[in-house]
Image 1 (cartoon, helix red, strand yellow):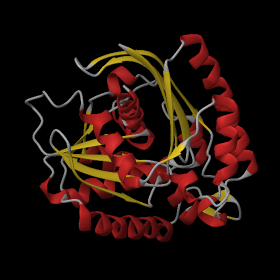
Image 2 (image 1 turned 90 degrees about the vertical axis):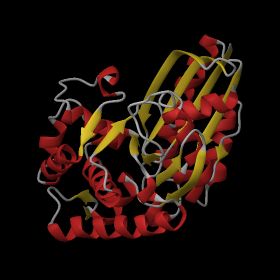
Image 3 (image 1 turned 45 degrees about the horizontal axis):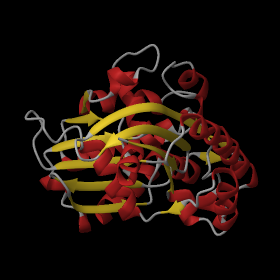
Image 4 (image 1 turned 180 degrees about the vertical axis):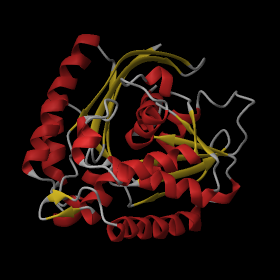
Length: 313
């Protein structure tokens, strides 16, 4: 067994996984998994730069993670940074700060690499199941981008497109510095237009229509699942591998889009850092399901973070 630490720094959140892994047998023992909403991608779509306050929130989380990694004596560490830092002109400041705190350089990976990690993390446990038809379509709805990956045991085709819950919220649901609650039909339509255009791009590379099982990853999907399951507190064991129907997704998305910030904040399974962006995230999920003709989505709590960990081992 190899003890590894994987860090996934995305547009909205930064996450840590420390685990013992054996690539020969597929054995996996999770020691610590945690997530902090840092909104690293704050304003990136508009300014092209990482905001100073966003960098400081991220570095504070890195200092917390560094302590956990030291306490658990991880042998190898890999830090992967995704959409926001890939887009930012001042990403050198981000890299320098991470190196100073964690002693490893963040790898600002491409969308295709991101897709590979997501697929591995999401499907490693599913590969032996007879109740799920192949090929899988793994959809990872992040803050700044969404990854589409089709494959059976391995990736066959992948594409990353620039629609995510933070990017769509900042682009279409913000007026005078505040999120519009509830959004107008025109703003909702503008998000749908962007998502449909992104799906057209994805289809140029990924045969979406060939997918037989849709696997959904990341916070927007798991949050919609938690609401669909009627949970009063977030319970990943109930959410992991839950199967949520298109009808449920449509119903929840409609209710979220009709709600105010206060109403969403009162839903206990919505993390405070997702209250403003869950409307756009749910809308992306619904649009994806409708485009590919998926009657349900299989929700996975294992995703790019787990794929990064396996890549180290």
